[in-house]
Amino acid sequence: MKRSLWLLPFALLLAGCGTVRIGRVLQDPARYQNRNVSVEGRVVNVIGALNMGAYEVDDGSGRIYVLSNRGVPQRDAQVTVSGRVTPGINIMGKSLGTAITESRHKVRY
Figure 1 (cartoon, rainbow, N blue to C red):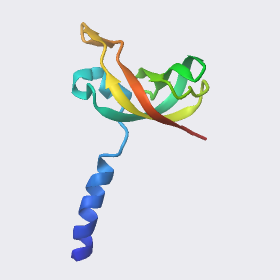
Figure 2 (figure 1 turned 180 degrees about the vertical axis):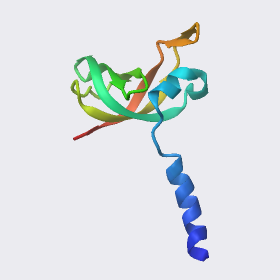
Figure 3 (figure 1 turned 120 degrees about the vertical axis):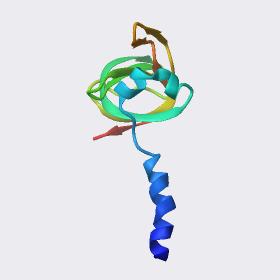
Figure 4 (figure 1 turned 45 degrees about the vertical axis):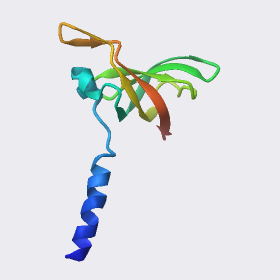
């Protein structure tokens, strides 16, 4: 019994550490506005120079741009990205310009 009580807070902590589907962020960007999230997917577009730039990540549910001043991963890399959501505008139920300002990313091999 005591062991299971110790595991409960640990399990709750881990539950908050998961990734969010990009489609979910794009459906309701106001919900994630200025909140830290983690997403994972494949890098499909890259724009960058001198350790600054942007890249687009696709997880199958949607695509989102990631703004980085820590360098950008290569195209087709599998990444996990953590950062703060910056909402764009919403036109007829479609989110345009929503992005993540990266705090870190990890390339998965």
